[in-house]
Length: 180
Image (tube, rainbow, N blue to C red; front, side, top):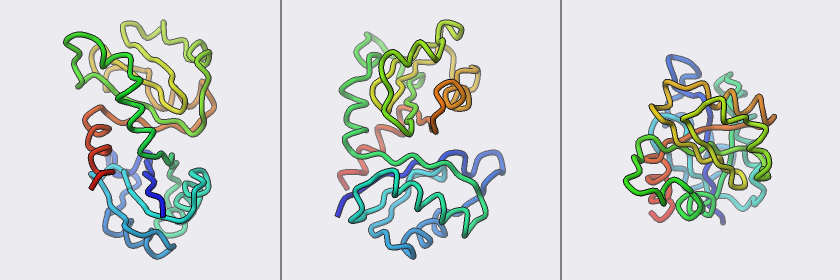
């Protein structure tokens, strides 16, 4: 049995794609996942399964959400190692006096190459910064996530991927939950 973390994008935001976490949990248990746990109302769901393939798990969840709730919800599935690598590889955590409230991680559906950073044309968003590490894009917003155009929609369009962004506090808490 392996624990996976499904990151659902765009649920319970501004009155769109409303889903009660208890109903989501029941739905996932009904299709065979066990030890289903949610964090916040924004689509962070731990599931245990014999299935190892993250893409297959994401597809199953996406299909079932559409069938049960009628919502088209992108899903990115990650592992504990993905979260651990956030702490190990983030270039911004190493900075002196870093404000973690301005740090975010975009989790993407495929592993990227470091040269994909050029495709993002991040220089047009200065002073925001970004760095690619596998299926993660580390982001440091100068002012905040709400005041930038360097967002999930932009990342998806430029890289042709599915992406979902979590703030540093959420990444920290999700890693703690993996150990519970």
